Image (cartoon, rainbow, N blue to C red; front, side, top):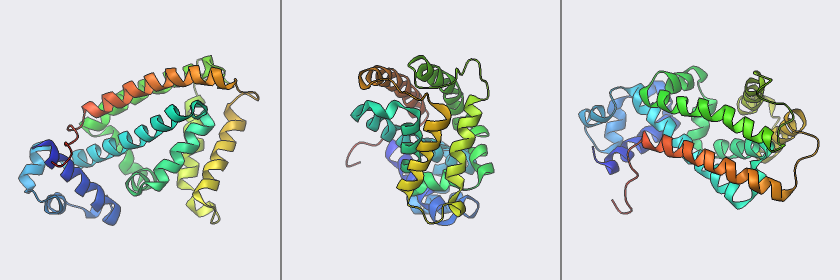
Length: 231
């Protein structure tokens, strides 16, 4: 399948997932919306689960690129409370990302762990997470040493997940207010009382950018090349 057609299929799958949910969408639906035959889809993705695994990875890559852009624009985004608040806003404002991250948790886990593309990305992400936390601690951006606290990532993940899944508890609060609340919780629970000055943040930001850029490049290798303009 050409790269342009492959991305057309991924576009179609993402649009249908947002509109109807994973279980109601078939490969035939995706093929029809993308203007290709079912056999063409199966040539590239052997199952519906693998297809939507690719949708998840591509959307994750787009979210990651937005995070990198924010980090390059302002080194203060390297702090954990800004990173997680920013990620919350980006994901909740993208219909596909929101559907993937706040929908069926079992499906999200299956896309990440039961598909070839999901497993490949998960391996890279699992290696990135401890390195990222170690880097933040080394630069004075974490209160607790992740090498001495194996539950640190779990505590962080559980904290942020509650904000993604807590629509019923938000009481009508705007997304920006909910993002700020997430940032406040992370700031008070996981970071030192005094953060480093801006010039030190800039040094940390460059290291995180290099590390995260490598992860996104690895993620991109698992997807078809982006089609050229006008293709």
